[in-house]
Image (cartoon, rainbow, N blue to C red; front, side):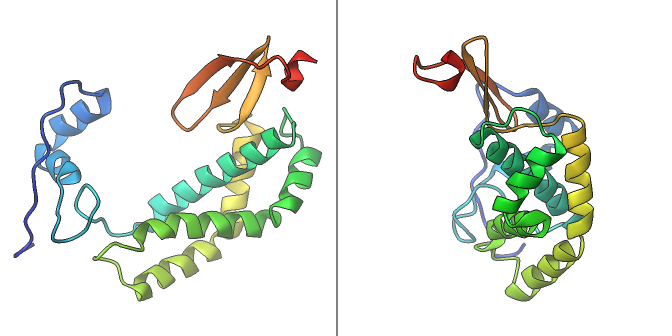
Length: 179
């Protein structure tokens, strides 16, 4: 874009597999996604435009994580229909939890200089229109046993599962798994 300048990223000392693959496919895309553009905005990478399909996928995953955390907070270890229904009620039902996640995902575009309020509103309307589909996809994830967030205890070790991490730490002596 004319008049916009940035700072190229430094070469990492250690590379992840995904970064190496991305660099191999398109070095320019890798550089642009990690450069800084201080005259444009305060975040790393060139500001992206919203892609409804990508945001919808993030919404579905975010809802699964929200539900899984709510189930874990309630001490529920299995996503049975009854357990999910009780937790959903506390979260405002399917529509409520999906709309909360849509707003969370759209908040990422609030300071994006390439995205105006009218565009965000159009994306919001389309995502809200897809709320029933999001609920259906979350149901499929839960049916597969996908509980990617929250904490569970197994053999005296608290297991935390996040979007891309699994960590096990010894439970505190007063934790419910010790009872």
